[in-house]
Every structure is written in C-alpha cells, then in structure tokens.
Length: 500
Image 1 (cartoon, rainbow, N blue to C red):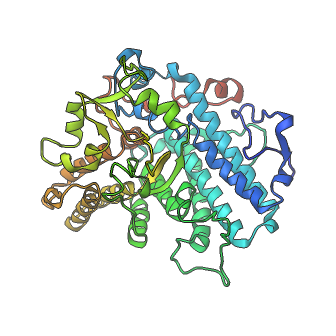
Image 2 (cartoon, rainbow, N blue to C red):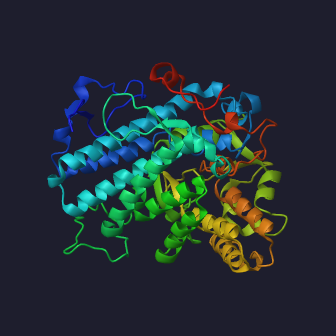
Image 3 (cartoon, rainbow, N blue to C red):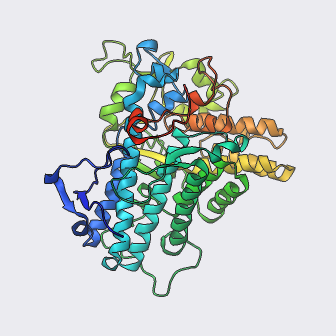
C-alpha cells in the first residue's frame, strides 16, 4: 500500500480531529519503519496505545468516574448549580463542547495509533516471533473494536432492538488505515459489522496464541517468548486478551440486542475460565482493592487520577479541611441505604456498602478511588469486570424464558452477591417472578457500577424513559446521543445524528 504519511511520535503517535488528521512537530518525529525495526518498537507502540486511553479526558476520569457518571445520575452534587458537572446532570451538552471534542479527538487519536501499528505489523512481520506477531495483531484488532464500541455507545443511538431503522442511518466514521484524509461516515449497521469483524480476527488469533486459551488449537512447536515478562499474567489484564475480547463481543451483542449470541459469550467465559473474585483480605484496611481490580478482565492504569480527580471531586471538604468543597460528588445517606438495601438487612455486610463509603456524616463520600500509604492496589480503572459477565448471562437467560433459565439467572446473581460478602441467608429465592429478577439485575448494576461510567450506557441500551434521580426532561436522543464536535460538522462535512 502506498504511504501518504510516514511519521510517528516517540512511543505515542499524534493525531488530531478527523478534519485535521495530523499535527506533529518535526523535531519529535521518527520514521515508522525505524520504530518497527525491532520487537521492542512494536511493544512500545502497543503500550503507547493503552497509555492514550488512560488519559484523564478518556478512561482516566471523563469516561468513567466523572462526566459519564454525572450523565448516569450516579452522584449528588454538593455545590448543586455551582458544580462543574451540574449541567451534565441536566444534559446541557453545550456547556461541555471542549469535553466532548476531547473525547472524540482522543478516541480517534488512539484509533490512528492502532491503525499505524496494524500497518506496521503487516509490513514488518518478519521482525517478530510468530506468536508475538499474532498476539500483537490480536491485541490491536480487539482494542480497536473496544474503542469503536464506546464511540458507538456515546455518539450513536441506543435501544436498537426497538429501532432497527437506525442501522441504515449515517453514524460515525470507521477508520481502518493510518493516513491524514477525512474518512466519510458509515451507516451504524456497517460500523457494528466492522467491530464484529475486528473481534472475530482477534478472537481467532487469541484462541490459538493467548496463554489463557484452552481451545487446543496451538500450532506445532508453539511458544510465546516472555523473557521480558511482557505476557506475565499480572500485566495481561491491563491489555486486551482473550477473555476481554470475548467480553467486548458480549457487550457488543447486548447493544445490538443479539441476546443469544451475548449469552454464548458470557457462558463461554463462565464455563471455561475461573473468575478471580476479591476476598476478605483484598478488602482489608491494608490491601484496599476497592476498585475490585482483581476481577478485571481489562482495564487501564490511571497514574494521574488521584491528584487530578479524586482530591477534587471525591472529598467533601477543601484540601485544608476548613471549607466545604462545592465541586464534590457525594450521595446522601438515605440514597446509599436505599441502593444497598440496608433497611432490609441485606446491605450492611456488602463490601460495596461497608467499604466504599465514608459514612461519618449524612452526606456519604465515595472512597473507591482514594489512595492510602502502603496500600497494595492503586491507579486501577477496570473497564471490563466479571460481574458484568454474570449480570449479562442472567439478563439473557431471563429473556429466553423458562423456569430452568430463571433459576440459573438467579444463581448467577447470587454468585456475585456471595462474592460481595452478602451472606447466603440473603440469597435471592427461586420464587421470584421474571419481573422481580429483572429488577434484581437492575439493582445489582446500581450497586456495582458507581464510579465506572457504565450506568448511562445501561439506561441508553434499554431505552429508559427516565433515568432515576435525573431531571424531568424527555429522555430522547437529545439526552442519550452526545453531539458530534462542531468542527467535525463545519470542516469534516459530517451529518449530525440528532437535530436540535
């Protein structure tokens, strides 16, 4: 393929919005063919892709514990109208043009880096051991799919089983190559199919080469060189892997309403891979794995989160403890008690109630991302965790219907509850009706996903006519679909998805 552009920042590629693909300083450029002359160059480039996603404007904060959770009504705001996120809780997106533009440009920046890596792989395959080539390609394709799925969930439509007409409408651009030219918007149906294609490519390779694969498809003489511990089991959850790719495909199928396929992926994970659940020691004062990062299938490390985000938004007083912090997120005691069913005797033992909240006053402060001296688990932001697999399987089983499937769904919910320290005396009974099981699934999502940026997607996927604790507005596409950055419309000839 003829190259139209052939430069790379050291470790990180640079890309701006789709309307102006490249904006690099010549003094910091090196040629792609130099970067990809060695195995280490490929590993550095891959690591750089993950570093981009950990940025505060992406999964380090905005797409997890701040902006996205404000959209999902996950917090109360101490400063109310003076809070930086008040207008987000009111879906006044015009107040967040720079935030939304930052999400868009940084996500496509990450995609450009991934695309350059994929092209480098194809043009320099001989540089790599066959297993490292296959694993790098699988990571790149599955990571591109993961990022595109979140672009779909943010900037296109939800509730697709009830709105199949949206599949034929122009949505977002799907960029597959590394160059500077504007790529036209694709129909939503095409974008979703491209994500499936990327995941199929990745999963096929992972099934053969991933150390966790148990499919028996290893090539003759299989080995995965690991002298530098690049594939050590302790670091694999921080990069895409077989389990994460299956979970991403499960999430994609749920978004599309392909519930049988989603159940197959969830069941594959549950049946073939032993979940790693947090235990009492992990939740102790010394270990403090409050993000449940041991249960992470995929996540990022957010080294700037504590200084840049936690101290600002997850503390009820200012740094000198003399004044109220009117930027703070919190929940009133009554709402926390309601979420965790404290009055019913269920929540008091639940680690998500007992360990994640500072309960010294009527306004509870969220401790999930706080860091303390000598704690073992820091900086972790899980993006895919085992509870989602079980909640998804439960929802799909209920949709299939039948007494046996309902009982199995209840078992899956109880599995998560047991691993959140809820005693078996409070198990959900098999006598629950289908509607009651669905309500328990919803309650589990509410308990599990404060701080993770997932509840807005949950409401959007299911087409909720009202987000609990939200304002009295019409919950239509003007709420659920983030507006495309204006520069994309003005200079990229984009068609807006939602009319004012």
